[in-house]
Amino acid sequence: MNAPQKEPKPQVDAIKPVDDRKPSLDWQAIILITGCCLIWGYQQIAIQAIADEVPLLMQLTIRSIIASACVWVWMMFKGIRPFQSDRTLMPGMIAGLLFFAEFVLLYSALEHTNTSRAITFLYLAPFIVALVLPIFIPAERLNWMQSSGLLIAFGGLAFAFHDGFSSSAAHFLLGDIAVIGAATAWAFTTIVVRTTALGQIQPERTLFFQLFFSSIALIALCFVYSVPLPETLSIKAMASLFLQSVIIAAASYLFWFWLLRHYLATKVSAFSFLTPMFGLLFGFFLAGDPINGSLIAAFISIALGIYLVNRRQGS
Image (tube, rainbow, N blue to C red; front, side):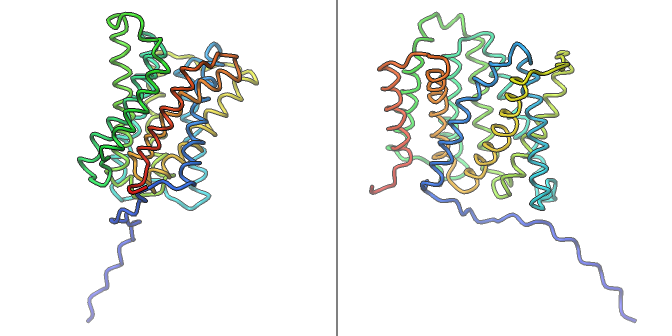
């Protein structure tokens, strides 16, 4: 009598062991990264525009929940299962909590430091990525020219916001430490995505993990601090929350994780220096904020630094 045959085990979506990322950015990547930075540059304006109507923490919570739902619907449309037995749940949870920590630390820091100092210290994140990531992935190591480019770009950013450093550093110490903590959380979100199973799965799942777990943490924090849910919303508030949720948190971050999936993180991260500069441009066009020679010089410095980081060897 033949022994009963065992039913085949259901196949789990395999994770590619081969890293097929492109070593250099092409024009498609450059356009996408610049577009993301442009959108993120407007983000602060969208948040501040309705701060009197919707508290900052509630804005973060609402946008994370709506963005999670948008990404989930998109995955269902594409036939992508968010939770699979492929070693992504734990790093996904860590990435989500790091994302939560980044924004909570950043917005808490703004109560104890000025915006210029916060922006400058926040963009220590690309340096942390460049220092830590090559320990795990040697292909991400920058050479001396690329490292110089990173320093030049950061120098341009610091020059653009140098006015905020005229006051005593001791007065802003607590806020500065919180911002550096936010920069570290941002950097390690990229590092976790790049060095774990998250780096080999669909960008939609990576983003969903980040939004889903950060939403849970944000909801809990709203309950702890008794942050009120607005009873009514103006047209301006609804438009801002739509922009923050669908365009920024869902669409632009989906493109960002797609870029991290197909290109080297150290080179992609260098473009983030453009974000606060685009914020200054939006301030000029929408609020009439002045643009002087110092800011133009800062733009040129950042552009040169990004070029050096992404310059192909031999070119």
